[in-house]
Image (tube, rainbow, N blue to C red; front, side):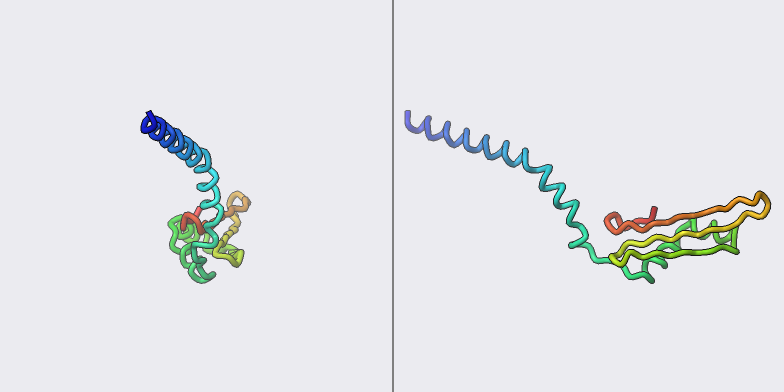
Length: 109
């Protein structure tokens, strides 16, 4: 009888532990996502600009509108943004291409 009680107690303790781990897992994942800045190294401004200049959208925009204004903004922590503005003199519309580097996904949007 005492062996059954011990096994039942261990089963209940394991069940409670598993439920605790399942309930706390979303908080652990959320903290891991929030702390990527501490883990990932940031790129320098020159590296981010080189990434922007290699994108297909940047090359197509520059080919079509060679006279444009570029504005590069670096946030100093490995993130960056490039805005290119051009004037279409046929329709007198201002065209803008905005590229942003995301350090978490290491991609340009």
